[in-house]
Image 1 (cartoon, rainbow, N blue to C red):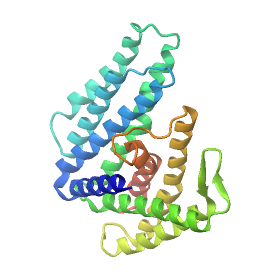
Image 2: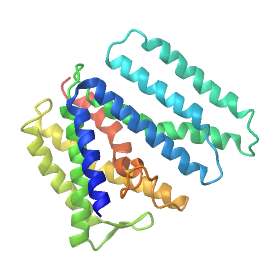
Image 3: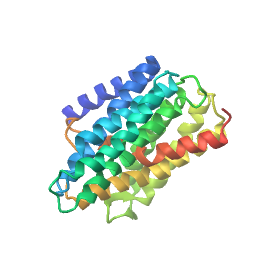
Image 4: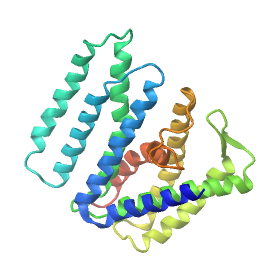
Length: 269
């Protein structure tokens, strides 16, 4: 418990610093997180006997992060990295020709699935910080606060009042009571956040809290489904006492793209 608390404290401290020290630190930190999550995903898949193109996949992930970052920072070399992305997509197919695998397209598919499932959501999350063109940490920080709030109070509500299982097949501890409790507290926190982070209205903050609560929970269940399908408890061991980074950010993976799309389409930019 002590190790878990110490790890959690320092990790939260470092992550919060990433919000407050400007766009370069913000983008670098969350790009690194996305690549580490991708690395964990490939490691999980390898336990099944399928071997994705890990090196090419990680390089392609890095190129995607650099391209997105250079676009938001208005760098002149964005188009060159865009070309490299296409090249490495082709190389993943080409490299598989040299592998002695009975199921080469399984390995190709998991290489790209890792990018879609673990890295691209972080790109959408980082994009939330640039919705109003210039970098502003309020929206992504609000996202993380709502994600943590929902996760924490869903757990506490479920522990105190939980009776009816939500998806017992994939996560026996999750309950409808916990799910509803997490939503209620997240909406309350969204109202409080809206008094300080004024880029979007109270209405939009509440909608964002609902998206995060519903699809963050679903995303958590999807990651649990992945781990149960390959019989592992944690996605990794990079965070002592907490498991892997995918375990900590699983709620972001499905919620971040949907929050970005909602704010892009319906909030004033």
